[in-house]
Figure 1 (cartoon, rainbow, N blue to C red):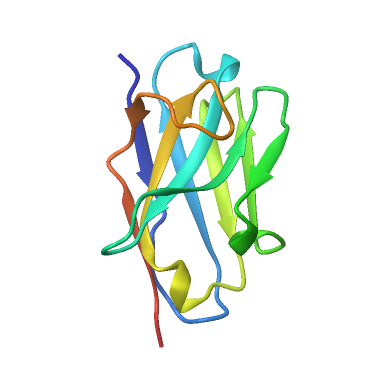
Figure 2 (figure 1 turned 90 degrees about the vertical axis):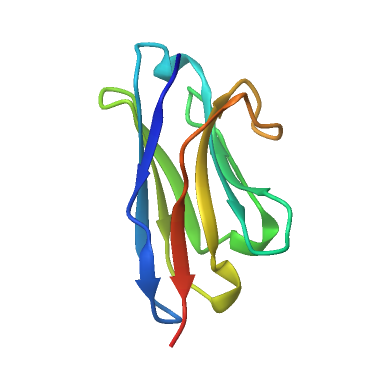
Length: 118
C-alpha cells in the first residue's frame, strides 16, 4: 500500500508563492509518474502538473510559466513550486502516483488547502 502525505498549503496573497511537498512511502516511488491535481468547490478534480521518473513534465495551460513540478527520488518526494498565485488557484491540491502523465493512478494523498486571497 502506497501512502502519500502532502504539506505546504496555506493562505497567500495574490502574486505570492507557495511550495507544496508530497512524501511517498515505499521503494517504488522512483519508477512511477507523480502528479499534482486540484479541486475547487463545485468543480471536478483536474490535473495541474505531472512528472515522469525520467523528469519529463506536463502542465495544465492555466499554470504554465507559473508552476514548476520537480521530484527528488532519493527522498521519495515530489514538489510543486507555485509562483504568481491567483485567486483562481484556490483549491485543495492532491498528490497522485500512477503510470500516466494524463490519467491519475489509484493512490491519492489527503489533500492540502491552498487559498489565494487578499
